[in-house]
Image 1: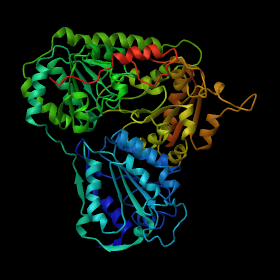
Image 2: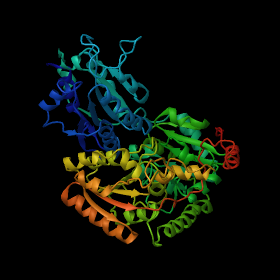
Image 3: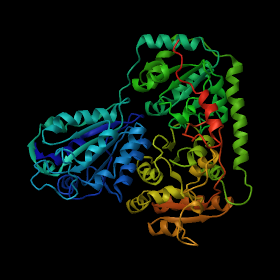
Image 4: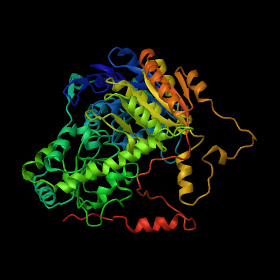
Length: 614
């Protein structure tokens, strides 16, 4: 088929299909987010226009925002579908690097198609070209290399034939999933080539389920059978494998208490008798208490990042770690006994060797007992007490008014601790996205736009602070214009409150976080009218002062978003220094002369360097 490079790429994307966790066949690439410029408008832009009925193209308003929307789409689709983002060369391309970092840190598939400078070099230096004195082949798109799982620059049309299968492999692989960048020089986009018909044959991608090595299964079985206080940690890999039901069955059969990571949150029904709560700094004291007593930890599908492990101070020094993960890179961390394989398939393979084995009932009972105490603590934090609402109180209202198929999101600041630690899930399909791998301010709004496209079973609600709103809000208009409903709860506490908390908590002086501590030449500096701003972006807007007002405003916002098919924004002033604390440590560099240094040294001395394998 004789076509341009851009036409071939678009035709290939249309031909790619995907099987969902439920077995339905859907487009692998359900949406393209685009801002056109001189690097992509005539090549890729023309190709997309010609096939616009077959692959939807959505207009973004910042390149970072639209790429973050693509990331949010992939998370809501449980990595079974992939968002695409294309930009011009230069600043348009570089604006997407942050989104690539989010996708890379969170192991989420993303296809980036930035325009690039001319391969011919005839018009050099072209508009927006950054010239490297010693390397004429280098362009700004090389910045994507450090945040891409797969990077290629297409300098000849026929290179697509070799690279596109690799693109599909990375985007659908359970171990390698992450961002793919194809840099597209604008002259090459327009070049024609006779492509083989087979390149455009429809393909349905089924995510593979690699099974573990039998020896590692036998070793894991032996380790678990020797445990008296085992603990099960469920991570994002359980979600993407669709292994939630099997994990619960596994725990139930053997009486093992269950905890969740941030990425694995809402896999377990809150009232499950074995649920100890979420683990780590932003988790629950109940789960952390069990983690400190566990003699064997079975981690499934998790990166075991610092917020999950409290910078590796949660576990006892003698703990033995068994790690099931599709990625060997993660499975071997901290000297774990690595069992490399799909979460669902591996838990099934463990079953025969553990037949008849069950944990001491006293240990099993500790999960419900400890979580009951944590629930009582959360109930106290959620109770109305007058004055401006706290984050915990707002999360309680959203939790109470949300249905079992609704979807909740946040990313940065203090809200991850409130959502992860305090949310009570009904179970079933995972319904939470807390982007705390890269903790990207602004993801809350842009990612919610993408999630609203993919999650059509219920309403998407995103919670964010005033700082994140000011960081990146333009995709509210994108969602309003496109007709995608969502609710955004904007919590105004007058600054970067959680970082100010970190300053003060370690003995530092409040500086440059709350507006009261920032430099200004005004005696009475201006403040943002978030309600007026959101209204100007095409959103339905509601405001609240007290907690009862917020409950009413949030309920009306849900109705408005659904009926009017646009974002509804609830603006509420919140207390700047009320937090849900799980009692876990997080390592940050504390200067020797600050008062927090003694506590830092004490916690550092308990940090687990490497877990035992025997």
